[in-house]
Image (spheres, rainbow, N blue to C red):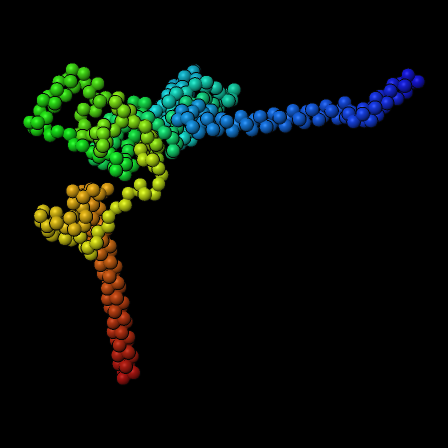
Length: 367
């Protein structure tokens, strides 16, 4: 008993000595060390997360950990993994909105449940899976490099990674520095030798001719130096300004302007000033149509964003819409006229019926 009392006294002395020297007790120090370690771990994890987001945002290729529920056909009942891989293969080279990119490859397939389920009489097997997907996910503002494939007065077409289409419209090309140079005509004697040489080169090596874009009708060249748009091997750096998704296919809209997101690069369409240009276009001949288009600022020589055929098509749509509205108004007026006539006939019939009944009563009184 005396020994236990002595031990307690020694512990109290050590604790009091630590406090007197400004040192915390061992239990408090341990708790404090754990708290400091926890804070360090939290801060490091925050930094790591921030770095990961920064690197993911600046790279067009990403690896995404995805999970989903799949229904496996009964033909893969003996090998569920083969069925899931076959379904994942069908997602390749398609834009998946949930992954925000085009799926290029999948790996590390794993089942999240040890047992699959079959619901009611449905023969499909339902299970939850997870996998790593490599996606191509470009974002607006990224700078990418593509190879020039086609040049026209309206746009420049490129290929990124020999797979994905990119279009650079005219209003995203600095026309104060670059101009479009039309190619030679088919029967132009001045360029006959060049075209013959190009045709011979295309016949000998069609792949290299397609890569250099010899099938185009012209090219964009610098106004001062005369160099063509793109480097010597045809590669051009651009800024992504938009994404176009159609039929699960992703294409990009690019720009080579210094400030691609400036409002001054937004095209402004000219509006017609005449009261009814559609009627004038319908009733006039070819020469008069040309004159009307010139008055509207749609001449072929004028540099406008909307072509003549597009304007004529839009004018035809507007005329059809007005015709449909006129027909609807006429039908409404006809319905109102029918109701009015029916109401008048009804009131007239009621009046005749009332007169006949009064006449009958008068005869009864006389009798």
